[in-house]
Image (cartoon, rainbow, N blue to C red; front, side, top):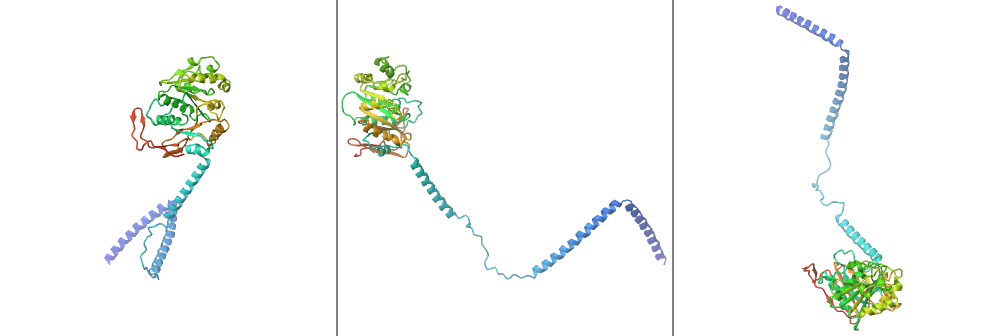
Amino acid sequence: MQSIFSLRQKMQTKYQNLKLKSDEYEIKYSSQPEKELEYARLMRFFNINEKYYTLLLEKKTEFSISKAGFVSQTVVLEKGLPNMNPISPNKQNIMSVAILTSVLIGLIIIIVRYLMHNDINSLNEITRQMSANVNILGIVPSYDKEIPVSQLVVDKNPKSLIAESFRTLRSNLQYISHTEGTKIIALTSTVSGEGKTFVAINLAGIIAFSNKKVIILDLDMRKPKIHKGFSVSNEKGMSTILIEKNTLEESINKSSLTGLDFITAGPIPPNPSELIISPKMDEILNKLKTMYDIIVIDNPPIGLVTDGVAMISKADYPIYVFRSDYSKRNYIQILDRLQNENKVEHLSVVLNGVDINRNTYGYNYGYGYGYGYGYGNKYGYYEDRGDVKKKKGIFKKKISVS
């Protein structure tokens, strides 16, 4: 009983202490109502979340039980393997469509370019388009260096391909006329820029190489260029000679090439056509025939003016110059007019500025026995600046029956 009493006293004391603490906490929390309200709010959210959490646990348990009791009716017969070939795009179909489209586009481009092509690029086109009986002298390849004006180039590299082409022209001229005496070579073209002055200067130069006395006359008085090619003044020339302001002897200029002389056009006159067809012109030509073997006349383009028709008619070797990829096909009709209307005999054609780097460039033409020359992008006779460049192939010459 004493022990129980002591225990009771102790518990009573403990109760009193706990009550005191309880009173202290009550006093403490009663003095802080905001914290009490916050606590109540948090407890409310806690109870709500606890309720939903318990509900989700119940649903998860029900789903696990349902899944465990479900037995599938399907049976796996064979394990599936991935298809390594794509269903789309189909490579074969795409390649076939691409090839057909490329071929179709290529054909359309070829047809359009063929229908719109109007430039002369081969001697075959000239012979097909013209109906007149015109001699084909040959071609002059395009010069590989940039030259500001037409000038003498055959003396720079005598063994170059362009020098060989002018030698071919010189050789072919022998088949046109065999008569003795001084010959007049008159060159013209359709429009400016086709290279007639360049052909005239270098053809005269290559003829001078064969120990002939040659003189060049610049009768293109509307747009003279000979003085620019030889780098001399144009204060006196054919125009001043024809009006008898200067004499023939004092107007003759010497070139750097032995045997090659030239007379510039002189100041531009107001009436070049009348000066060219005047009797004084015939007198000058007759006098020059006693002094030179060959007279080369650079005439104005007859597609623009008619000044050069008179000299073309009087020439022993009338030469008409076309330029590859520059001259138009309708220019060829002028050849028929010169032969039919103006009665120009022995008319010859030179195709200037041919690109020899193309795969092939061949042509056949005939007069008399018939001669043909073929140029390709491979040749073996070439020299530039003293260095011989070896290339495969040869410079082919073939004879064909016309």
